Length: 72
Length: 73
Image 1: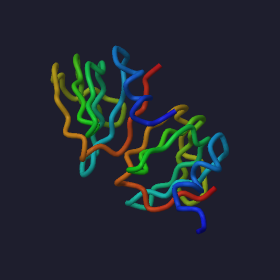
Image 2 (image 1 turned 180 degrees about the horizontal axis):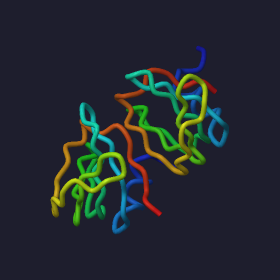
Image 3 (image 1 turned 135 degrees about the horizontal axis):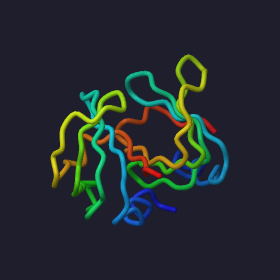
Image 4 (image 1 turned 90 degrees about the vertical axis):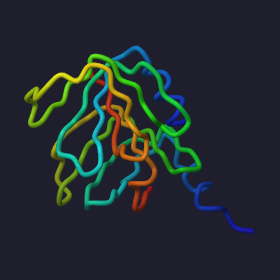
């Protein structure tokens, strides 16, 4: 049996990920943690619009139901 | 660190919360949080474009409306 999707997240803890949210918002940051709802903790997070950094936030918690995808 | 644990570690500190369907932010001192990510904030103010709109004091937020939680330095 292959890895489950959330195992993939487990394999990229402490690495940089791109997170796409509903409403075409994107964040990039170091994945510090996740849970079964796909709630995410990101460190050194920055918000991107059209691929450009629009603000740097530091630590952020993203609620899972807004997540469209997480790209390691 | 699990996201819920991270939020619990913020109890007693000031946080900013972005809610769905709302251009306003809520900023307040996190008093408590539960498994649904429902939050109880104290000394809460409503903020739009870095301007304080009004003071709400004690606010209980329903977790399903939350998009982002950011600690305030």
